[in-house]
Length: 203
Image 1 (cartoon, rainbow, N blue to C red):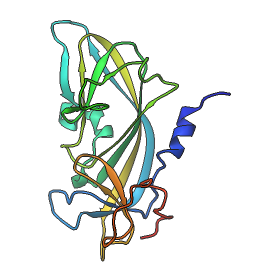
Image 2: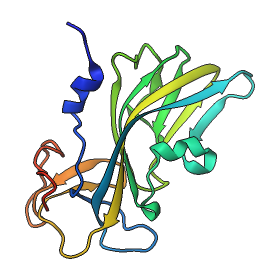
Image 3: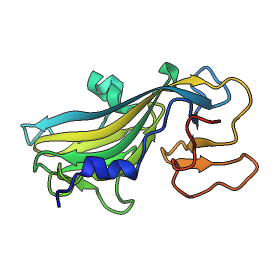
């Protein structure tokens, strides 16, 4: 049986639809913090980092727009009405790099998270499931030597501020980049799949 990860994995992290509501930050202009999706853009993005001089390693380089235009693709910004879901990661090369979500290793709080084409091969990507809606929510990388090509499966959501009352169902993104499905403001939050019960664009 042929393993088709990008088909299999999509069933684990489905894509939200136009009309779904996300609760996130309010952006610099303030607001309710509720956003309605108006456009969905799925993609696979390659980011290349390279070190040729052992004396000049890359250390905790933040993948945010001020450090390079390419990083806009994996960095959200509510001031430009964009929320990014970083779903999966794979690597094309054997150079070992350390990956971080903010200041913490991406896969463990206790040890460095080393990734390369053995840990995250192209045919078996690893799950990230990180959300970004401002420049404080970012991936960072350290690389001592060599070249690494990172492939990310992402979803970019273009959103508008929600007008009117808050919905009964929405996806809430925390400041740490985690997502929680909320069914009703007055009820306890469900820890089930954050996607499975949002409906087809209903509020």
